[in-house]
Length: 393
Image 1 (tube, rainbow, N blue to C red):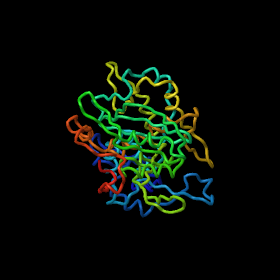
Image 2 (cartoon, rainbow, N blue to C red):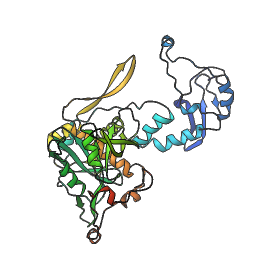
Image 3 (cartoon, helix red, strand yellow):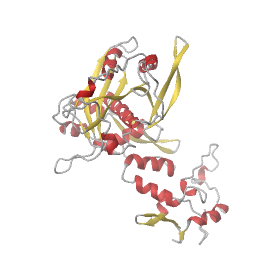
Image 4 (cartoon, rainbow, N blue to C red):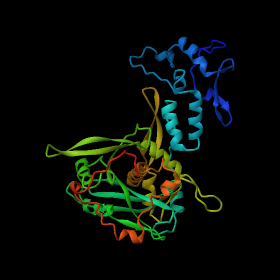
């Protein structure tokens, strides 16, 4: 795009968008050559004289050509520079929101330092609360399940209004998952409730189960429950968000279609980066944990090695850098379980609901739970299907 003042061609980049402190409505583009402040209205003239140029000239004759535009190029009257500046100010202090801004507004890949923190540090900072013991600031509970050939592994996680998390329990349910082993035990977990010391009883809000292994059996299990109580999930490295709205898939048995199910796609790379950032957080000098802090009971070293089993490395693929997650410890089930539990928390509303709304997600009081006769494994035909948006709480 040519500068309307000096005429020099340049790509529009976010680093050259400037505004007065706290006033995104004053956003203007600073020419990289002459330093002139270009107003939004100049876009019309700049667009008429803009040209496409290869960012790597020596590759301009490649058979496969890609094109890239960020939102700074939006036509005049569309997505404005002021709106882009405002979006950045709202996102800059929240890693999850900032990733979305970089991915969608700037159209760039999120380059994050994804090395896992040393598992010994996490092991040494364990806390003395007991398994299946709830702290009073836990607002809701989710469960993440990883499916293996001979067992189901799961983590029960409690979530707080400031996005802190408590690992409530980590369990291994033995049994051949292709022949029904472990699934009835898992159904019992769906029906469990945990009591806080203030008398509130919290059920499992959502259980998320990976479909990467024994997919048909996972589908069969999920169909026993409400569509937003037990959900099948599928990891996608390229998804630049925690979770995307579900897609309907056909469920077959013996080659025949027996029903439909909603399958949720999970941005596993996105969530691993977020998790490892959270695991590096430390309490302050007074012992107060920051938002997003992860609390763990006295698990053994194996759990923490599994939780930090992968690291993000940069590889060059066809001349371009690509960030990939690789195992440095074979047993990564604790990491997968936490990612799926976090996925369920995102669906509940951890990232979009205000703290007071999250706090209101608490469970049943002692006087109320005696009147609650719901059975999570009741046949689907005996329950009313839930109507409404995918993201309703």
